[in-house]
Image 1 (cartoon, rainbow, N blue to C red):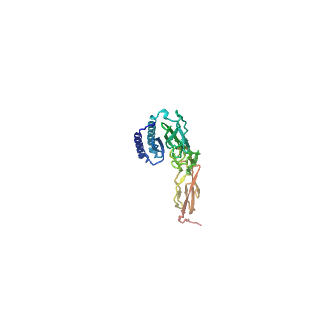
Image 2: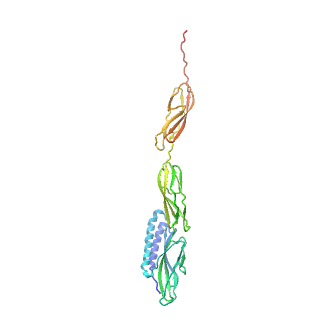
Image 3: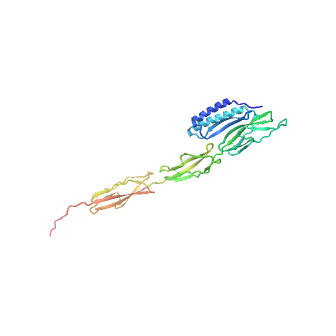
Length: 334
């Protein structure tokens, strides 16, 4: 019986090393992408070697973990293929998750004997495998052909591809300062896997209320992931400057006696540092007024500040008290 022997001790050691890497960086508990090699032995039991590579890990550790996984995967495949002759290799089969793999074999026996086949898992006895969501990975599967006495062994590489999520086109967003931006991406997964949507760039969440300092043009990257594959889209966000009115600080009420001078000194600022003009209306039409002896009473002056586009106003209340004047007399001559 012809059978290829693999140094499983070496591969097992490599599996342990990789698992330690995954444990340290990601906990070995999340969704995985697989490399699996299955072989048949003489007692019909299967020998399976696999390595699981975490895909959902914290961002700052992701790069080093994926680099180690990729390096290990390449080494694992290299070790297997170094032991295979060209005659033992069958063409690679590429399918998407959810598709059915069907191995169609054609053989002949020089002696005219009937040829029977044996397939290692995940292939069934008929050489078929209905893949499911989560099966994404690379599978190297042994196939034996026997005439009852002698065995020919070959290996087929099955590459199960995860369909990435579908993220529909997101329109550019235009808002005014002070308005709220809300992302509601339309995303689906062909395999109905759970999706995770993240945001990066100018925004890191799906919703953000702009401030009056946010005027400008920005880019937000929306990424949808099913744990194995991801798709991203850049969205242009424009925040339009909104002119804010000048700010007038409230003023205290003013009390004077008749004959005194009233001076109004309002404190005003403009959020955009534009030039501000002041206007006085009501009892006074300027910032200064000298009362006379007929002005006793209560009055209101409105101060209006303008930057040329927006205005704001405050009211100032003024009380003018009566001031007693001494009698006036003169000598009258006949």
